[in-house]
Image 1 (cartoon, protein in one colour):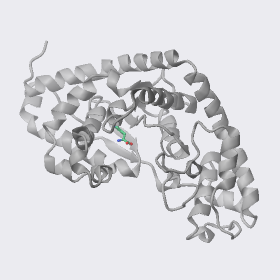
Image 2: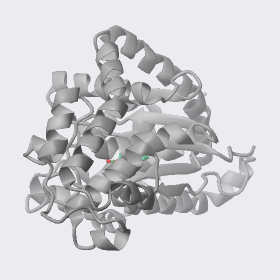
Image 3: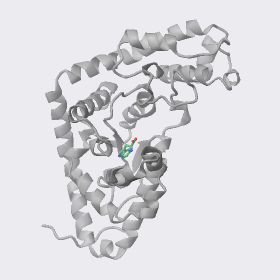
Image 4: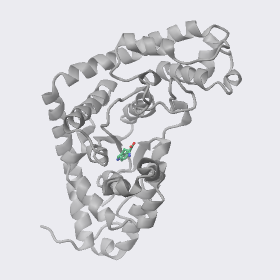
Length: 345
Ligand code: TRP
């Protein structure tokens, strides 16, 4: 048995406020990968509940992420979109990985330290073992490539460590059961580059974030045209005019961020954007950026609204995706159980 050479898996948490940073940094990348890979995109609701979620809000957010995927151009028929809790194999393999990963490995995870903060004793056990579930998400499909942001790189390395330890702990049994050496692939991260790191509209040194208390710091995918235009107009800048070359953006985080957003939305090079708008005042550039953002995001916003108005339809897409995901995961779980000596029919 050989494993697929190009299967992509990635996950997005349904924790609300999907914004321009998620769109340019992750979702457009997911869209592009459909060309060359078999893609599985998962709304990771089991990860979301590692911190308490209001049940109704969680359900609404799960549908909203699904709508954003589809409205942005992910094809749920050619590829797979589903929510994690519908495919029980994720939780099942995560338990097995709880027994493969070492305490010491998880103790080194910087995201847990950040999220748990000073209240470590009060964090859920799920928040601590979160990376094992993430490894299960990926490996239950024997996925080979994982598009993630820089912040998830350490979790991807842990996934590789878990795959490697499983492969070596059970090397003899893997062979005896007739599987090729190294049952799990070591998945490659496809790290989203700095070019797509979108910063806050209020502070060029902080990432655009759903948890920023100021709604003016981000453009949400649910913002209507007027709100988008207003937020761009109000975006913080400095008194200097826009430079004609990249050097002139040094130390001017807010200005650079707006130029990057423009370039990403227009699919143009930064130099090219500066050549056109450099030397002018910010107001003119901001007007052009607002128009561009409304043109690009408006149709996505409309389509998300249309999809969210029919939750039953979204749920059908999710259950169909889950059925197809289960078809891939089930035989892999059967292999894993055979390899480990867990009895099953
Ligand atoms: N931890 C990821 C995040 O917060 C989400 C995620 C869960 C994920 N499982 C995954 C990403 C598997 C890639 C692959 O961004």
